[in-house]
Length: 358
Image 1 (tube, rainbow, N blue to C red):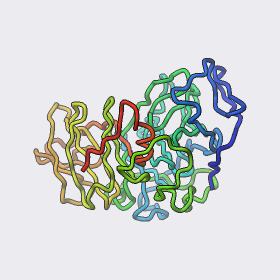
Image 2: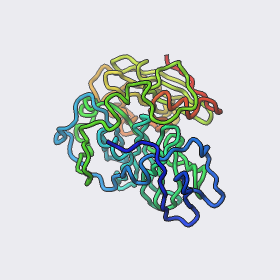
Image 3: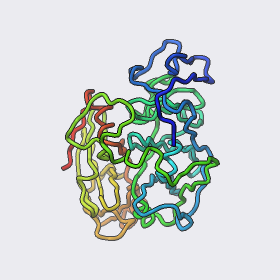
């Protein structure tokens, strides 16, 4: 079981400009500034108390025997390489420092907020790795990078403390779905296995049997609420500038459902399926500037949707059949998280969660 009680821990850091407050365990810069209120920061398992995996091991889909059809996996495609990262492993490590198509990428996952993101590991022009700081803001992971020792909010996707404060991480599209959908979509992909170098009971969910379903089981304080959805309702958030649009998973039907939205002048398509436990969003604009219209495909995965030109597309926004084969739609700023986390982060600022579907 992971240690998640609130404790005071003395941080040792590798950056002269950062010290630690011995009473709170919260690192302090020379000017002492954080972008987030310090009274909302809690110390959890301590710096690297939850260890990142810096050299993940992979198996083929056919070699993976520990996944059940309804278990969730995060997936990414960089260039021509596709990799999957099971929740059951991410629950214990939260950050996977990997190379995908020889590109340095970090997969981040916060079990407490249900949020997964993919970041570039090049910070300020230097390749680095990310670690789990042990600090928690609004139940969400605060990562740190080992090159500059900046502290990065996962859900804000920016440095909230350090020399790069306010700088955003460069992101990659990360999709989430159940194992059945992944297996059918990407049978030739590589999947992270449990050979992590750490002794963990990966078959046991570390936050208690019902954390991901019990709306009253939230470990750290929340500061605002919105009862339009259940607290633990998983929702896909799409954000452009000050606009945040929320697409609850349970608003989609079992089979693939496609909807169109224009957010802050950006034409997007959102596709979701309860059966596959998946919601993804992409730009509708192609490389040549054409704005496509999409419909649900009746074919089996990996085909997700078809467009008005007769092309077929997968979850990564790749055209896999038709005149545009080989093209890829641009990924947009979006990820999944529990409703309570979206509200707590953005419920009273310039972004206010708006349920746009249905």
